[in-house]
Image 1 (cartoon, one colour):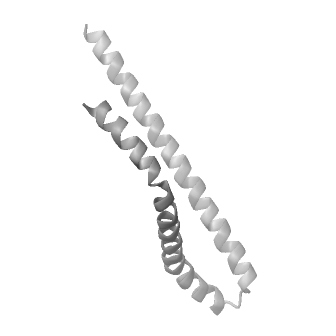
Image 2 (spheres, helix red, strand yellow; image 1 turned 90 degrees about the vertical axis):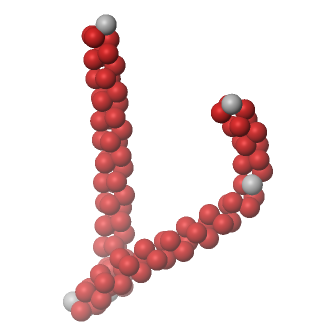
Length: 98
């Protein structure tokens, strides 16, 4: 039943890509703008108080954002590795019980 539903929904989902793409792009831009305001404004205020140029501020913030993205990817990799190890240990436990 699930396979039947997926086979029916998949082509319809593919047809909606023309509509979804601009909506997702606008949503991403709005989200990026909101997050930028939340992060950049307090940091910008602090950096302007210490007389840091706009270029230096952009370099500092971009490196912080890249570091955060790198750390998020590492956390995701560790989470997946833990899930795999947990699944493997459950499989071993069930095979030993037999």
